[in-house]
Image (cartoon, rainbow, N blue to C red; front, side, top):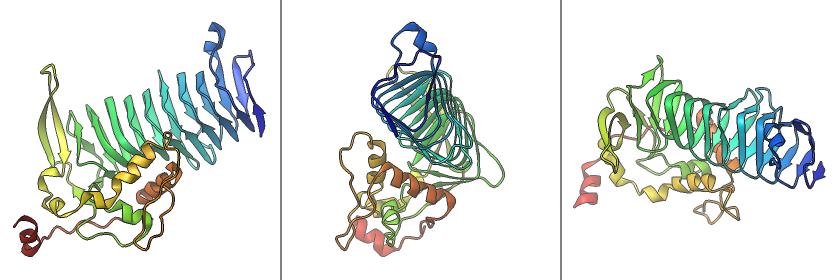
Length: 325
């Protein structure tokens, strides 16, 4: 890998292959505002990047600074290995990472007009006009100004005027929202995993009792909700929640599930100076809580390698008496 301490290229395209770029790639004049950046594999960029179009032919590639593409950020479909954006990514137009074999990891929030992701992991939230996700994990929220499409997705929550869904999907937080009723293809399934013992599953040890996933009926579990902001503006939404029907949640020590450690460690990955791990009962430690390891764990949930059992809906009277009396 050839080390570059400074980019001094006047052409309209900066092509990088087998390079370690120690500086930022930022425009120093009006002419460089129209410069494209093209990565062709085995590239690490330590600083921030600005480009008219950022095109990534293949990985491995790593961006340690923030990235902004004026028009398009495009990771090509046949990209191999892993493309890692450590910090925030934004475009004024589109972000496209529809991968067939490789993986793309976004370590912070991403923001764009049109966002299309497949086989991607987002440690933060997604903000866009139209968002299309397939076989993707988003630990934060998916917030679309117009339309959101989900197909085999793990998401923290979502909020969009129009939501379409297919496949098997998981929600990390108790409630999600849409303006219009959600439209689901036949066979679509939603599960809430707020009460799943993700910490034990990550450590590959037996899960705690009264934990697991909860099946959501996106029609029966839908309620009309009015949200009011500080200026008294009212918005009528459909909310999809398990919060009102989960009595067993009072019997579970949420903190003991260690789910928050997985989410926080991934979302703060760019700011944590050391690698942490979950403590085992025998005094040992789990695999390190790196963004890469956490992404791999959630992809195993998506593909069924890590199976989350459904929560037991029956609660004995003795358990209730012990809790409330």
